[in-house]
Length: 155
Image (cartoon, rainbow, N blue to C red; front, top):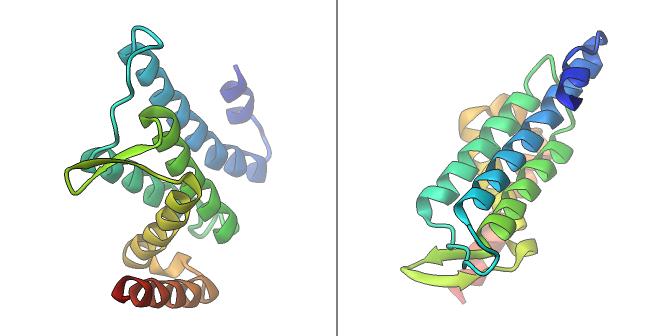
């Protein structure tokens, strides 16, 4: 019902904004619904997110980010990036219990750190897929953060 109201909105800007925010909502409901049907009882352990899961969530995030910030929509890139990365982290948290498989080991991840890393990865992909959509300020911040992370990993 809500989607019909949003989609029948005659205002061009309202329609664009509703489509942009409706996509992550549908995405979230779809994933959470799958999680409910896969878990017959509350005692069933959530499976950690594997590489395929993370690649899927990443791909959906990049698609959302590029589509929402393309010409014609012109939504604020940092806000859209925040929506995409927080949706990514939220899905991992809720569908997979905040666990991922990395280097063949199950690991619990800090959701804030996961959101930060997802943001960096989404910007990196956006620079490859839709570079015209990425503001210069965001690109410069991305370069600074990746250099900082490289130095930290080198220690």
